[in-house]
Length: 341
Ligand code: UT7
Image (cartoon, rainbow, N blue to C red; front, top):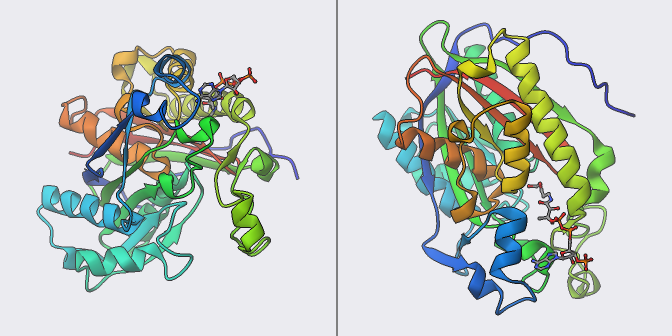
């Protein structure tokens, strides 16, 4: 089944729902390009020129996505002046759950002490965080929940082959969190659009360890529990779809790109991000960009890049903000917000 490339009308929630606080957490260990060039046949020059990445964070053994996620959530709750008990639900967005089950949301729930919360994991690869945000907003808008935490957390080093120069240089570990609640009328999430196209599956995937090809000694020996990526195919689709879906967000809501205060793209490659910003005719100063220091943290790129932009004062109440993501699936999505605080 192919994808319908047309986009329909604005998707609106019944109530005004938005992000009311953010948080982030990274492990302490910094791995720069020079250290990596001692591990695989690469160079600082190649990595910087092809990706814009200078360094990334790696967890120590024994640390899982839930550990990073719980710490990011703790910061978001603190910023909002809430206790973990105030949460009704936790949506854990991750491609690297601590285990296949129980869900990482359950582990975050216990680590953060959110005694009233239910929750679940959501995996749409690099689009997980914005798919999670729209899901959380639906729960709040329907009245099913008052406060939902969306936590993007990934330990990409658990699935990146440390001997494969094609992938190990690209990824890092980290977590970002957002609290989703009802906000002042007219503010918050104005629109979103999400897409999947499974024809992209062979270009970015982990072949073994799931139900189709359960783990065996052979699959482990063949490194089939690691990321396999056809970089160029992903690259060209990412530029086209992130730019197009962001443009749809602006056009169908009558927002002039000049009035967009912050563009937060998925941080996979600086060249992809800059190409998408160029297609939107957006000055680079208005693009959230943390890839140089943290690389691609999958579900955590958008919430951490957002958090850091908010800390720098790049956005104030009432400003237009666009999120755009692209990842395995293929999955991609955009979201337009009028900043709520
Ligand atoms: O978050 C999920 C979504 N993922 C993405 O958005 C990633 C999208 N793709 C990309 O960012 C880029 O395609 C890469 C950064 C992965 C690769 O950049 P590229 O400019 O497309 O390089 P390439 O794949 O065309 O490879 C060029 C050469 C190859 O050598 P040959 O075959 O030309 O001799 C690679 O083997 O670069 C080689 N290469 C490396 N050389 C040094 C690949 N990785 C490395 C490396 N160091 N780390």
